[in-house]
Every structure is written in C-alpha cells, then in structure tokens.
Length: 513
Image (tube, rainbow, N blue to C red; front, side, top):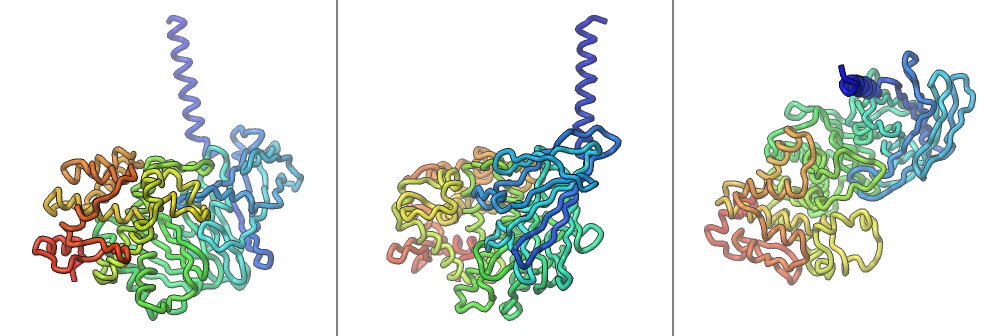
C-alpha cells in the first residue's frame, strides 16, 4: 500500500467520523423552555434548560441566538431589544460566565457537566402580529421574539412548556400539544417560529372540515356567529382546496385578536388583529375583512409552500432579499377576490371592487414611473414600514400593483391557450414541482419558465411590465376579457355591452353577473 493510498483511506475514515458526528450532533443536548406570563408588567418570563448528553463530549460554551426578523414581516425587527435581565447558572445555582456578542447573540460558558439554566425576560406590550403581547387575561406569543436557538442549529428539536396563571383556560396554536395542553415539542425552530400561540381566556371553537381539524381562537368574538365567520371560512378553505387539489396541513388554527394592526400567515395558522368586532357597518367592510382572511389563508400555499428560493432555508439573522415577493404577496392579493368568488361569498361587482381598490392605490401616482414591481420586491426591506411622505411619488407597493399584474397574467395565459389553462395551473405546477417533488423554493427564471410551460410560450410582455416601469397598455389585455379601466375613479369595470366572446371570458374569470 502506497503512502498516498494510506492517506486516502485515513481521509475517508476521518470524513466518515466527522459525518457521523454531525449526524448525531443534534442529539448531543436537549432544550427545554419554560415560559410564564407576567400580566402586571407585560413580560414573558423565560427559562431555558440546556442539558448536554453526559455520555458524549460537550463544548466549553454555547452561543444562543435570537432571530432578527419574522418570515412574512419583511423588516429587521431586532427582537433582542425587548430582552432584559439575562442570566445563566449551573445545576447548583452557581452563576455562569456569559458575554454578549453583537446585537442578538449570547455566549454562555458551560460547566463540567455541560448543563446550564438561562433566564431572561421579554417585554411584550405591542399590538402587531410579529410581536408578543401580555395583558389582563391574555397573551399573544410571537415565538421569533421569545425563543433562542443554538447558533447554527435551528434544525434542533425543542420542548416548550407554559406555566399559565391559575385562572387562564386556553392555549391555541397550530402545534399539537405533547403530553398535556401546556407542553409542545416542535421538531425544529422553523416549526416553532411558524407557530404563534394565544394564551388565556378567549372564545375558542374546534371543528372538522373535509377531514381536517380546525380551531377558532378569538380574543374579541363579538358578532362572529352573526356574520357567519365559520361558514365563510369553511367556504374559503373549500375553494382553495378545490383550486390547489391538496391540503398540506393536518390541522389549522385561526387566531384573531382585538384592535391592532395587520395579519401574518403561517403554515398551520394565521394570526390577525381585527377592529375588535365582527359587526361591520357596511357590506363592503365585511367583504374586505373576508378578503383579508382569504389572503392570509392562501399564503399557506403561496409563500409557505410555493416560495422563492431566497426564502428557504430561512436565515433569521439576515434579510432574505428576493425579486419575487410580488409573486408571494401580489398574486396572493389577486387570489383574494378569486377565492371569495369561487366560494360564493362575493358578487362579481364586489370582487371587481376589491381589485379596483388595489388599482386605485398605485395607478394615479407617480411612483410607478420610478420603481418597478421587481425592484419593489428587493427594496421592501427598506420600505416595509417607511413613513416618508414622498412614498407614492417615488415608490410602488407590490400589494397594490401585484394583483393587477396577476389579472393580466391570468388573461394572457387564457388567451394563449384558448381558455384551456390559467394562472391557477401555474400555481398548481409550482406547488407540485417545487414543494411536493423537489421540496425547495423556485428561482426567478424557474417561475417564468413555469408560466411559459403552462401558456405554451413565454409571457414576455407581462414580464417586461414586472421588470420595468414601462407604461402598461391595460386595454390590450382587459378588452378581450370584457373589462375596462375607468380613469375617472381609477377602477376596473366590465364593459357596458360585452360581446359573446367577452361574456365567455368573464364567465371563465367568474366575473359575470
């Protein structure tokens, strides 16, 4: 045997040992979080028990990392700013050395047995869907800002246990409890961070629909039964299932809270703030709210399953910059009115009004001449909550222009295929190929290739309107579909006297009277 051969064998054996060590690495320690709400001070008291496997060597220290953002909320929130009173001790209660590294990292020195108990408090007093809130007899837990993962190992399993105030009755979340209603064992931190929780006293209802389990957790349920929230939600679920042909979850939790701002999608749930009541002053407000619910629900498919490549695997330390958020958000806005129409909830006029609202929010403004839809997706990390009053003059919003581009794409695909295919087929193709089969995100070129595959030819012109600030000849698309732009009030309407072919197109879009 030559020296080179011996070296090759030793290298191979070393690689095998390292690979085996890496494969077993996640089992080298256990993480148990215990959380108790402090309703008087608006805090979540957090205790992390880090336990090393005594039969294996363990490192001399461990680095704990708090996420800096929450997927779906494209802003660096730096959750560590809400953390106070960090401390660490061993099993005997002796203090352990630790030091802060950067904005969101803590390095803790481990004792001889490799076990440590870390404690800290999270100030929880914000009413937005990416932040936690504790008050009175309720707590909303947004996990990204509460739980730390071990650096480089967000794929590690974790156990989370809640110590509830004595009079609190419920915990609602998309996660299934482990051995009691207060303990959960998500398989990794991605699952934990994607599973918000509502704790305390609130209206809750469980039901089964088409073979899947659902839970409503409503902080302020006033009017929910009268407006038929459950029936409307069932219809939305059915419409989405019929369109996509699959339901990827076992159970789903609808968490609706009182007065506050926004909604955030999750794989197994949605977390939304309402106006504190389901009694709407007008039918328009009710339809708008149901479109909001449909939006967050359809995100289950379009962004949680069908996702740009830059959004998976998730990096909670850095911005996930992608040119494709107009697909994730803008096309989801397009499917708001499609789902409400297919569910029999909205009339054609109500659906068009939803779409017209988006059109009116960008079409009259100068910003569309300065920023493309593609560039908007890149720059959202700068502008998600940018209050500059020149916004409409220099920028657009993919929530507004995105759904209108979705309509044009849908019309273009239907024209190119003589109504045999639609944008729905693109969504189904992306879901099947990249989520179910390849189990990864799609690239920008793969998205446009999927559109071309469905349409039988590239959507060259539509792509130009995404990538540039070129003027869009709306009539070139809308007229064939029996639609028109009304610039007197910046709306999209049906033509006054549709031809037979236009009526057929309107019927295909489910926009006929």
